[in-house]
Image (cartoon, rainbow, N blue to C red; front, side):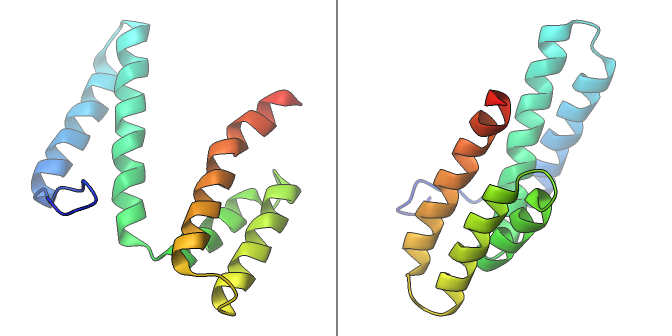
Length: 112
């Protein structure tokens, strides 16, 4: 474990957990179990993809995802990306802002 609470786990083990969750999601007949397996699967997928991309790549990816569905989010991410690339904000500040944008996104889309 490092000082940020992250733990290093063998990728093969993570793939086995991922495959197990996928199997549970596909074969379970109980809706609550399927939903929980899907939630855990998505958390694992998100963590795996986050760790493989740089912050700049993550911002660009989210910009592409929101281009047609959420123009305000897309604009905020564009500004954030420009500030990060131009050195106007630190990577830590950019990460904090990115996480705030991503956390509020589901609430904005549900309101309308």
